[in-house]
Image (tube, rainbow, N blue to C red; front, side, top):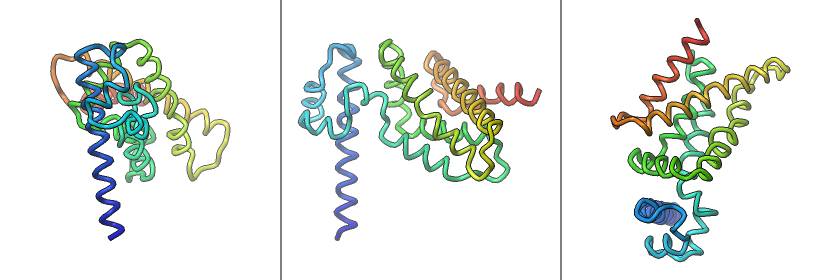
Length: 197
């Protein structure tokens, strides 16, 4: 009975999250990000503003905080694949977070972020810079923590992060609707060439 209740609770939480995200995306696209209030989003999603804040600390988090991204990244970082290079390990974990949600919804959210300078800056701090310590720590696991090892882990993490950021930007500007993973893999191939060339 407890498991069934937890399953029901999880499904309700997911339904509420999805309703809030979909309502916000629709309103942002129709009226512009700055013109939409949390109260409007909550009303369109048929939840209270208080419920909105239970899921998202602020309006911008609807676009920047994909519900599954953190967990997908943590799962990927918890397991090294046999023969996987450090570059591929970090890239796989980052890509897991970037592609954790619905692809069409992800593209809509990223496009909206690109149209609002304040959101671009927050995304840069939150995703492209703020979460890097997790990747650095994963690279340093199970090895002596020397100054050179830390420098190497930071260099790899920053390099892969910037490759993924550039790939996501190109993906958003592309007339084709190829998956984000394809664009990231192409960009990573250029990084691998640079590292081995």
